[in-house]
Every structure is written in C-alpha cells, then in structure tokens.
Length: 207
Image (cartoon, rainbow, N blue to C red; front, side, top):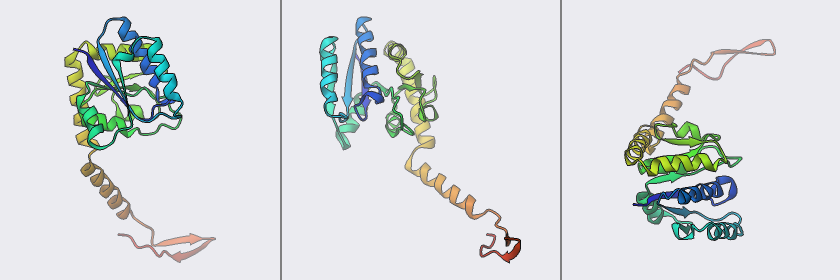
C-alpha cells in the first residue's frame, strides 16, 4: 500500500514544500509507493503555479493532492488518514510550529528538520526523524525508512502521542502555568530596599 504523507501549513518555499517534493521525486524513482496530501494556503498565491509546474515536470502530479486551506473536521480528517507527517521547514522566524504538536496528537511519526525550535518538540529517533534543513536527500531517506517499516512508524507515532499527552495537552498547559504563578508568588521578596543609598520599606511583603 502507498504510504500517506501529510504536509500541513503555509505552502511557501521556506516551509520546505519544494524540499519535500524533491524528496518525493526520489521516492518515485526508487519505486516506493506514496501519496502526498498538501494542506494549506499558498504564500504568495502565485507560488501555486511553481508547485504545479514542478509536479508536472517530474511526473508525480497523480501522487500529490493539493487540498488548499482546511479547518476543523476537514483538517483533522487529513491527520487521521495520514501515515507520516512531514514538515521540512527552514523558515527564518520558525519558533514552535504547533502543527507538529497536532501531528503528534494524532500519533503520527514526524519528519522535520534540525531547525529553530523543532528539536525541542521532536526527539530525533524517538518521536520522529530530523534532517538537515534544505536537504531533500536526507528527507527522502527519512521518508523511505518510514515507508518501508510499519513497525517503526508505529513506534515513533506512539512515542509522539505519549509526549503530547505528557506535555502538550490543555490540562498540562494549565498545570504548568499554575505552577509557574505559584512559584513566582512564593518567592522571598525583601521587606526593605535601598534606593540611591536610602533604605525604605518595600511595598511588597513576603508571601
């Protein structure tokens, strides 16, 4: 069966979509069956023409679905149908791509990059596989490994789901925020401070 690969996010060069498509060309040449779903809006809109031209020129248009921007149940259905989530970003302002956390929520193994905040989310070799930015060969290798090893997909996906439950649920976020506020509130605050050599009573009292 063809491995279902999902890309979801802004469809622009620096989010790595062309890197992913180049990797898919390599999968095609190696005879590894796959289907790629691309979900998201093109930025800029004219970039869509570049992507469609690439697909036609490299003979993989029939293996790639351009779904556009999806929200709600329609988006979640794409996650549920996928086998692998791939997000090979090298976006300059990338910080904490929440879409990776969404993929982990659905128990998907993640293929992404050693870039900005991504390695703080994806544990390479445990919850997913990371490659160097803008390296389509390395992305192809990661995708090929997962396409050919269902047990590896399952293990990485399960570990990702477990990390999501342990660290990224709404309940866990609230617990962490509460803990932080309590920690700040319980700090020892000096009762007297010195300003310009003069000691005065602090308006803050120790909790």
